[in-house]
Image: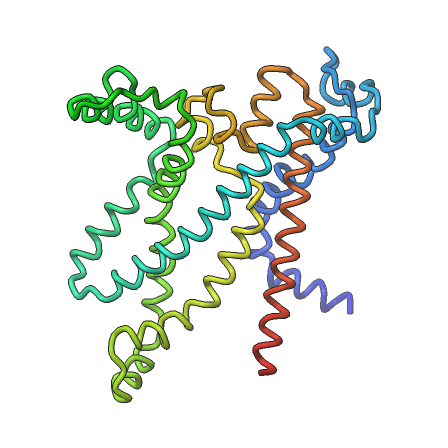
Length: 310
């Protein structure tokens, strides 16, 4: 038995060495920091002797950080915003990405496909800081393009960065605009991998293009849609920090519609310096995300078993 293990180890040694940097990265940046969650249960104060000494000397406060977090109105606001925005992103990204992927798959010009994909993918590689300056050129209260159009039309200029009612639409549009190219390419690649004989058989049976998409393309995409949706639901308590912090420029007047868990943690660290409160919010975010991920996976598995039975 021992000889077999040694032989297997020698045979797989190159693969294990290749996996070593990735494993080390996971351990150092994901598993070891998990022990730092103990900060959420302490009245944490930095010590000149370093983090470990600070962790040892800071007094335990139990669930007090969580009680203070959930007793304030902030907990409801940041949880509501995080969940509702992410649910909207999941639905819109799924519908639009699949639609665009199907449309691209029907194009016959490879050159046009490359042009469309490149133009849609470009925003994905731009940082939110750069995008925030582009957006400011449109929304600037003094020299913004939108206000120039409104005033020339006889309307009154809008102070966009203090008027909260417009920002849910702005954030949703910008979030979908930035990620739609990347998401559509994933589905497009999956469509390109579908066996052409399915479409040939559908044509023989007299199916038109819409029927081919409905009965061949979409069913073939269901496994990929399921996997990506499960991953998205698992991250439903994690918001894109750059989107919600950089675009509204962290304006306090927009807090009710732009504050999410990630920005709350950051503001908690920079403004109040309360590490225990910020750690409690981060732990709450991770635990709920993990529960949602596991729960969604179980629901999908049961649904698959049920569909197999019927």
